[in-house]
Image (cartoon, rainbow, N blue to C red; front, side):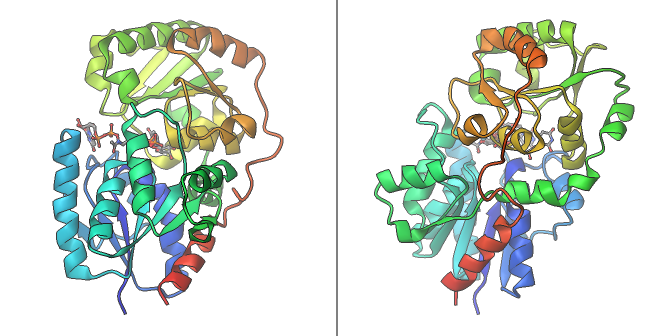
Amino acid sequence: MSAILHVVGARPNFMKMAPVLRAGARRGLPQLLVHTGQHYDSAMSDVFFTELGLPEPDVNLGVGSGTHAQQTAALMTALEATFVEREPSIVVVYGDVNSTIAAALVASKLHIRVAHVEAGLRSFDWTMPEEVNRRVTDLCSDVLFATSPEAIGHLGREGVDPARVHFVGNPMIDTLLANLDRFDIERFRASHGLTGAYALVTLHRPSNVDDPDAARRLVTQLTSVSERVVLVFPVHPRGRALLESAGLRASDRLRVIDPIGYVEFLSGVRGAALVITDSGGVQEETTVLNVPCLTARPNTERPITITHGTNRLVALDDIAKAADEMLANPPHVAEPPPLWDGRSGERIAEVLQAETL
Ligand code: UD1
Ligand code: UDP
């Protein structure tokens, strides 16, 4: 019997895939795990496999970094050989990274079915590489797993047959809920020597960290926020050099550190008075943990984190002002988004099983 082949490659993929792989294993489904190697530093990849108790990938393609065209081409070439050799029954792709679109394109041209976990999210901002990745991936997908009702609406308006769309909730939140007991605020405080309130920062969108002017404005704002509250900023490797040349300096009030593992990061989020981010996943995690979140972007593909959650969009130059307001008046979650209940992996595996019978 041919296998369900999961493709992952970048940090946010791992926590989305974990509950699906586990639920598939519980059902005894034949499965293969392919890591493209898009992210390769141990703090961007290995740490998640260890902490989430994930098995070693069956295949690691070691594709690494490059321009969009170089990276996507290398991903496609390597994935094509793998799919031809392994003949999977279906390829499961996650989120909106280059590994996602590459796998979806390759599989669809080989006439292998594609299932997309986190289908239908739309920022309507074509300058984001992720928006291109999401749309093309959804076009290539046979089975579309939606995390929120808006996503179903977007897919419907784009002409996707509703029979192919499954509202399953959010597998990233499965991972969060399964690990909740491990998110230890006191331990985070102790290991970072934090005595009072602190805010956690994570930023890596090209629009914020690849443009020298945006990076300078960001650093100005963060420095200003750090006068009010201590900041802990694990820096994604993408932006480090430019942020440093834009003036980012580690200090007692602005702790600039390397990326941290999942348990440590979520421990930090859980205890934070505020999170400042441009990450997709972190907007969702703060909503579930009821932690105020400022998203330094003009738009979000996850509006449910605003309507149901703690998230607010903020312009780059307004971060310090918005941080003051949010610290003074923190938003609260009345009810988490529908089906963000820890059972999404199970729902997805059930559909995958039916699709591959
Ligand atoms: C990618 C995704 C983005 C996602 C993010 C999650 C695309 C187009 N972008 O962005 O949607 O939000 O991952 O973190 O797929 N680098 C390292 N070590 C690593 C990985 C990357 O140093 O392990 C550095 C390299 O200089 C590389 C740069 O980061 O060129 C960017 O990496 P890349 O995977 O191309 O995109 P991300 O910015 O990580
Ligand atoms: N994360 C982490 N350590 C960090 C920063 C983020 O473990 O230093 C986790 C975070 O909790 C979330 C995931 O990485 O689960 C999000 O990945 P990222 O922000 O890189 O990608 P995005 O969601 O923006 O695509």
